[in-house]
Structures are given as C-alpha cells and as structure tokens.
Image: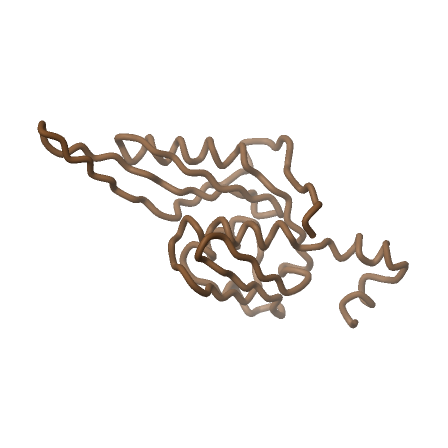
Length: 172
C-alpha cells in the first residue's frame, strides 16, 4: 500500500535495542599514506513492532556505530505483527536486492539470513520464512526488508474495512 504513513514520531530511547548488520572499511590513498574510515549499518528496534535503520560513517568503528544508531532512531517505522508472524506474504525490492517474506506457523523461528534476520528479529517477529533474491549487499537488503515490512497491512484494519472478523480475513 503506497500511501500508508507508518512513521513513528517519537518513542522512548530506553527500549530500543541496536544490532550491528555490517561494517565496511574504506581506504583512501593519498601521497601521505593510507587513511582508513569505517561505515556501519545498524538496525534498532523495540522487538514489539518498531524498527529503523541507520548508516554511520567515521574514522573509528565505535564512532561509526554510534552515528548509525542515532541515524536509525530518526528513521523508525511501525510494523504490523500478528501472533508473532507477519499477516501476509510480501515482496519488496530496493536497488538490486529483492526480498520475499512469508508468514510461518508458531514454532518455525526466523528462517532468514544475515541482514534480513537482524531486521526481522529487531522488529519482534518470531516466526517467518524469508528469501533474498538478487544482490546480497547488506545495505540494500536492509532497505528492501524494511520496505517490505512497511507495506504490510494490519489485519484488524482490513477486517474493519471489510466488516468481517479477523479470523475470517485469514481464512480467505
């Protein structure tokens, strides 16, 4: 749903947990020698439906991670979770990365790799099947996964709009 605005305006910083997805070391060669800088992509979430990502760049790893966490706190979205999984299947693409996330029954766990796992666990999803197609670049995978989660529709709102119960929405 393209017009959905599910950005979170403010949340208590104490409940957000950060998770480092990837660190990239960049080398700039000058006549004086090599200069190293680091780029860190970080995901923050409260494990209860709120998640965000950020990119921090600095001369030291710890500073880059701290900048990434601050950037992620400014980029939070609310995600619809139903009984520990997602309400429906969703496909999303960002750059060369394409992700597919599917709901799973209770006890399945998070079947996802690397960058996708970090995002899904940070948002609080406990049972999901996920597949990444195309690029394995962690930056694009994180952005595609958050785009897919942002497009999820809330089953309670769908049921209310259709005038039926939530159980009937899932039975078809």
